[in-house]
Image (cartoon, rainbow, N blue to C red):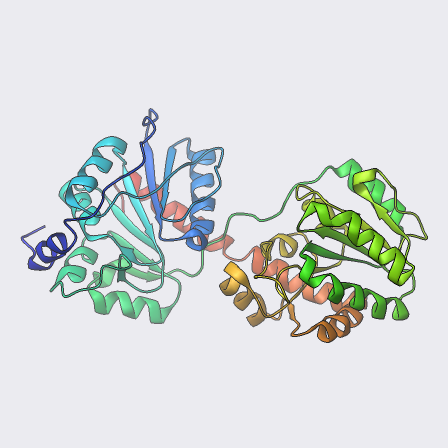
Length: 398
């Protein structure tokens, strides 16, 4: 890449960057693909790409992300280096990737420039809008254009995004509208024997779940269940409390104030035909409850600090979703679900009771759940096409 005034100004403006603070683990032997996601939400689709590459192609996969991510079995997850020439060189010297796959549109100029100097093949996937690293705004003439021109492929989610990348400097022939990537599956596991046993106990009873219920929303859920019992007297509520210590006080409150029969899973009490509420306190069994409950209310979204569980978890397992006006970190996911009419928003405890009553109709709940499942599994074909492009890039054919 020829001399760039913009890059010089960028590096001067950021020369006091603190640098890489964490030690890097040893590089594994073999071919290594480097994936980069600007944040945790973008990482969902990159994790799926990485899993497929590791399992199907036998390559090592490194995913860098500025936000913390849970560990994955087949993927190395690391923070990205500070965007300075020195840290960029140290990062690439250590990992020696064969290809670099960026996502969304975030450009780290020092890092991308160093990759260009090493003739490292680069691709942008799920492109939305080309931007520099956050908090690095400034006047860097020609910098974005010069960097984007070096990407072998720029695969965008839609035509407006493609226009934005072309305008910013990407080579016209490199830009292609590809669509949205498939995200890492949110389908949580469960013990099938346990599911079968509980399904037999529940028989044909209607069931709904309050997932990760905070204390602030207990009254709203009690009121909704009380109202719904008038419509379906055999209705069973499964509650997983946000705080396990709330399980017993909540059970006692329901028994005293409502006269309900409550079973506590922590005390190995089994729900029978007379049980109106079944309280669980483990966050490791959501895969079981989503499978058993045709309707799920996502706790924290009504009166709490924001939705606690990922809405794609119930969506992936066929449970219709109810949620309040506080999405927490899942705003964009709820936006997708809402656009697809795949989740039911409620604005108040009264709305929750009304929506629950409406979804006691199996047909209505099934339509909502089917639409949510389609959102959760969206992008599979796009992922296949992008995987093929990555493989060709690795083989020098792209």
